[in-house]
Structure formats: structure tokens, C-alpha cells
Image (cartoon, rainbow, N blue to C red; front, top):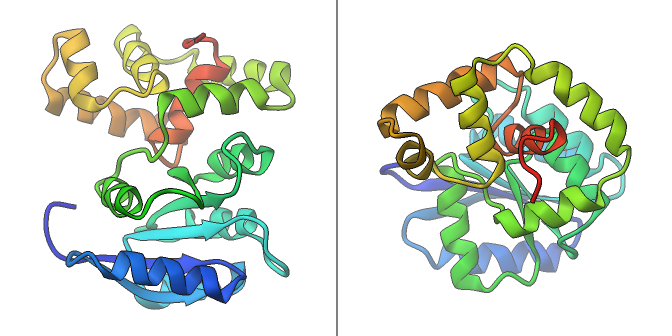
Amino acid sequence: MASAVIRVVVVDDEPMVCAHLRTILGSAPDIDVVDTAQDGAAAVEAVVRHQPHVVLMDLRMPGVDGLTAIERIVRLPSAPAVVALTTFDADQYVIRALRAGAAGFLVKTTPPEDLISLVRVAADGHTVLSPAATSRLVAARVGEQAARDRATRRVRDLTERETEVLTGLGAGLSNAQIADQLSLSEATVKSYVSRMLVKLECANRTQAGLLAYDAGLVTR
């Protein structure tokens, strides 16, 4: 987001983790942790109550877990960016979270200065996930052939240009990088991305990027 304070909800079943993240994020003048929650149900309530821009979501919690909470949150009107919090960077829970609509993931050992900058990235609508991490996650996924078959069916109606833009998303490129690669304006690429997310029924760029992998558009 270009201006204003970024409102964040932190969700983790460990109160100390919530307190730690609140302290780190609260040190940034443009970030306000408006609430914390210890389970998925409370997380959804906090999102509805505070309308945050970003949610940091632990995945393994008692009661309503993070995966279920992500699925509920991304269906809300004006849904925030949900970033999964995890201990491992190649975790099947992370893959499921990304497919459920998470905008990316952060390992809990992320340095404080990186955490702050990545929350800003998420608030701006970008993927919080490196191309290298995407490659590891996709390599670790289960049900590969079934995912590939579904993805191939979903992308078959894209135009040639839309397919090129989707391939760029799968490679982890920004709109500016895709625009440079395809000799288009950044505004044109942004328009393509917005239309494709609707057409492919993807919640965000991350889901679209994983779809590109599944469909075989990106192989590395």
C-alpha cells in the first residue's frame, strides 16, 4: 500500500510468539499490530473486526487450524493478504496454505528487519515467497500428476499473452520484470494479472504462480 499505516493481525497459539512479533513489527512507524489471536476461529473474528491489511498466520494450532482459517479469510470481502508462519521452508502444510490462498510464507526465524520489509511487501499485494523457495515447495508437493492434470485444464483457455504473463508469475517475476521481458508496459501487465486471477479463480499471484508450475509452464 502506498501510504497509511499497515494494520496487521498476528495469529499463533504461543502467546510469547505473538508478543515477540508484536514487538518487532511495532518498532516500524508504518506498521500497527491491531490484534493477536491464538487459534483460527479467533483469527477470523479479528479480521472481520479490524479489517487488517496483512495477517501472519501460524498453521499448526489446536481447534480451528491455520489452513481452515486461511480458507475462511480469503473468502471475506476485501480479504487481507495472509502470510503463513512456519518452522520449515518445505513443509506440506505450507503447500496446502498456498493453495488455500495464502500470499506466501515466512519462516519463524526470519530476521526482524526482513520481517518488517516482507510485511510491507505483502501489504503492497506482492508474493512473500522467493522463486527458490517456490521450487523447493513444488518439488515436495504430493499428488503431482493429479495437480498437473487439473492445472492443464484450467490454463487451456488462456490466450498466448496471458500464458506468457502466467509463466512470468510462476518464475517469481514482478510486474516490472514481466513487462520488460515481454516489451509491455507495467500497467498492461498489471491488467493482465488482475484479469487472469479472476479467470483462473486464483486468490492471488502466489496461487497463480503455483498453477503455472503445475501446468508445466515453469520447469525449474
